[in-house]
Amino acid sequence: MKRSIHLDEKLEGSSPFTAAVEANGFVFISGQIASVKGTRTVLTDNITKEAEQIMANIGEILAASGLTFDDLVKCTIYLTNLQYYTAVSNVYIACFKGDAPARETVGVKELPRGANVEISAIAMKR
Image (cartoon, rainbow, N blue to C red; front, side, top):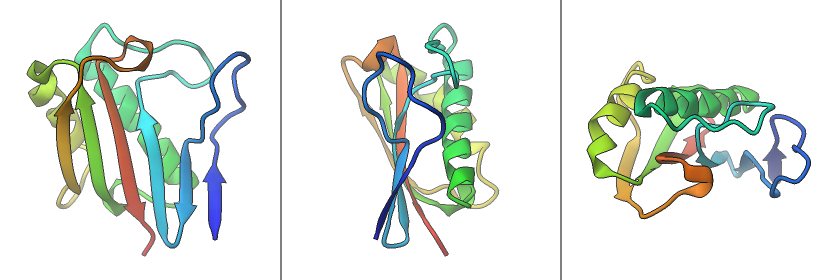
């Protein structure tokens, strides 16, 4: 069985977006940028604040699914500049009590809405 997870109503004129999909005990979280809920604002001026907003967005999706960061099993981080690696990693690792999930970091040319970082994730229900 498949269930879509939506956090808030769609902003007029925005693209179709499903925050996550739950299927067969897994929650597949769509790539998150540092969008501020309920606005068209995307934080891009400070890489640490950008990463913090992304992890807060992921945390909200996890909570809506009855999960926490410790239920994540795989993450993919996309960076427009690999010099952001350490700053993003510091924010990322602070979200976990135990071992962090498997992950990879990929350098990309460009991300939606001028974002510097995007993170997608997979969580598992226990």
